[in-house]
Image (cartoon, rainbow, N blue to C red; front, side, top):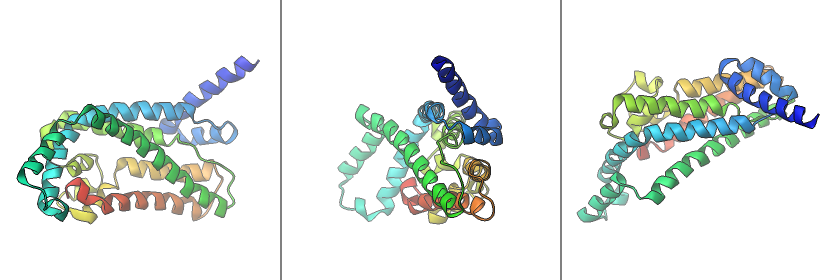
Length: 244
């Protein structure tokens, strides 16, 4: 009997992760009675790592342009000699194995930080609106996992030489920044944060608040909007590190 329950739970978790992409209302209704997150976590990690690997050549090429831009515009680099600047560029071109491992680790850490922030914001709204649910990381499958894979495919299709800065890589995802490619700086960074996947995440969060938490009224969409705009604001604040 225990084996049957265990197998059913595994099947539910896998189906729920899949339905979060194709039938989110069904997925969130199922989560109300059978909370699960293990399969979603595993799938998100695999997609994230695979997508990052696809992006890697473009990211390395873009890192050189980003570093050169920062050396020309950031006073932090003004004290470096030409030899030191050249060495930094060479290190960016051919990172050590430890740096590569840290890059992958950083991507995974960003996943869990983003899921934590998303959950905390929604839970606060859930409590304020007297909702009835916790939140899991199933939403991370499309908003992070598929996000990285699609961007990786775009990077491969365009070729590494297409990307002059890290900002060019981020802007490659279809979004508001695609419509206004000439906008740079903090505003450009903010626009980069509004793309098809962050908007998808907004829609999923609204659906999750309504279906999973049973929240109605303004709280059901204000909290997801805070997540969307807050993420874009973070990118805006760090736009200098993307090369403008």
